[in-house]
Length: 71
Image (cartoon, rainbow, N blue to C red):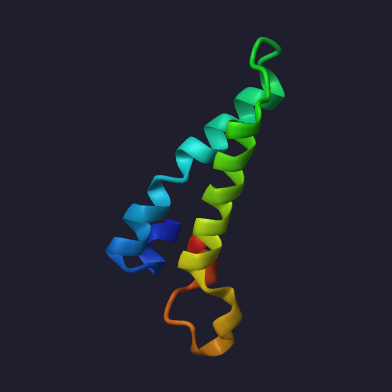
């Protein structure tokens, strides 16, 4: 089953934008020519913070968003 099938379409669409975050991380890890700068680190950290805010894991069992779909 696709993880997005467990999520409302709006949440799934927003989380689809997280692909750019993972692209930045893997380019830093795998491409030796890519240099880490402060702006890139801030962007990745803010992106992950946004994902956490969307997922709202602190709501526990009352959370309408299935965390399995987010992961």
